[in-house]
Amino acid sequence: MTVITRFAPSPTGMLHIGGARTALFNYLLAKRHGGTFLLRIEDTDKKRSTDEATQAILDGMAWLGLDADAPPTYQSRNADRHAECALRMVEVGHAFRCYATPEELQARRDEGEAKRAAAKADGLSEAEQQSLRAEADALLAPYRSPWRDGGDPPAPDTPYTVRLRAPDQESMTVSDQVQGEVTLNTTEIDDLILLRADGTPTYMLAVVVDDHDMGVTHVVRGDDHFRNTFRQLPIYWAMGWDVPEFAHVPMIHGSDGAKLSKRHGALSTLAYRDMGYLPEAMNSYLMRLGWSHGDQEIFSMDEAAKVFDLADINKAPGRLDLDKLGDVNAYFIRTIDESRLLHLVLAEVANLTDASDSLSERLQQALPTLKERGQTLPQLAESCRFLWDSNADNLNKKARKALREEGIKRVSELREALDLSDSWTIEALQNVLESYCAAHTLSMGQVGPPLRAALTGGLPAPDLAPVMYWLGREEVLARLDKHLPA
Ligand code: GLU
Image 1 (cartoon, rainbow, N blue to C red):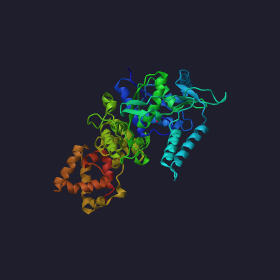
Image 2 (image 1 turned 30 degrees about the vertical axis):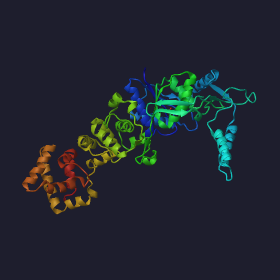
Image 3 (image 1 turned 60 degrees about the vertical axis):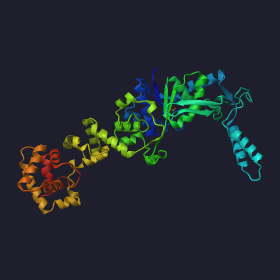
Image 4 (image 1 turned 120 degrees about the horizontal axis):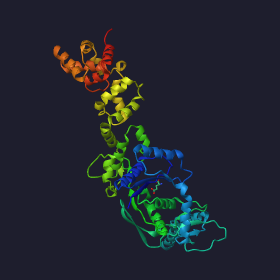
């Protein structure tokens, strides 16, 4: 059997990270089995679906590299097929035309609420209360239509909905790859509307027909859809279709255990890109948020695709932990191809200063060392600031102190020694510093601070020899000159 999975977002908003994780699990499951990963845009809610949201979903998935194996399917384009299936179910007796009007149904609910309230009134006997409660329960129970076994319309042209006849058996069991076996009494299921009075298909029908037509073998989705499965299964049965495997994945919660909201970072997937996270870090972090394989913390997509298994999805909700995401991102910043990292950091640096060839050259040389210094791309760019900014006009207290008389004298002497150095390599520069210390019987602790203050004005920077090497002779001398008397 070829495994076919799908991600089926409704384009009513951004692709949030919970959705991205669902897409990722479907993607990995398909890859694990050499199968097919499909994308279906569930755009049947015309009022709430937007082209911008569809685009945001496509962009988010493209950024994460979750490429579908076929162009996306748009659910709204299949409406005729959905209606055709509903009518087929009527023909074979699993569905029926229901002539109840929305007003009648509302009146029934109102009456149920009224009886429930009446049962609480003072002065009623226990028996009276019980009987009112029973009447209320019957009226508020999932709707079973009086037309479920057929029957003529009240008038020849009465509008109707098409409903699925809910199963009569006592209980129904869904065997879910994550939730296990869950049984529900079928009295909890109503006679589901398949086609509205205007002939349009409902979401519940559309999902099942599309999953069948796309050959989906595994439905992996958020557990907010778990109960829907009990309403969708009877559609498969009525159509005589194979039922796919289901896996309902627990939601992502915030660090405090509450349902994820904006406050916790329930942002769009692309907002994480804009905050300077790498797609491989997002994928690695998201897959571990709800799935595990041994105690391995970090996965490349290829590694995960070799071992991904629905059986390893946790039953408990994952908690979003931005510190951990930062650690994972730092790991990928350290390990991705350096030319790609340079490209990404240059884009960040362009937000802070004017780019130039010499700056890009400095960054290229410095990044292998500096890439250890940030959890996100903007942090990393900021930690490279000393490469273009001498901070001379903004010295911090420590730098000012280091550049008092004695310090200036050392900077001046060092400038001379540096200027005389034939070679400008890290090793040669280290030698200049050490020879200067030796010649003046000074320690590096006495020489380093004024030189560092003059070069970077107190901005964080690594060892002085590499810093001077990256900056280049001309820039180093110019920075020192700024602090020396003319
Ligand atoms: N369109 C639904 C959603 O965005 C998903 C339906 C499904 O996966 O079956 O929540």
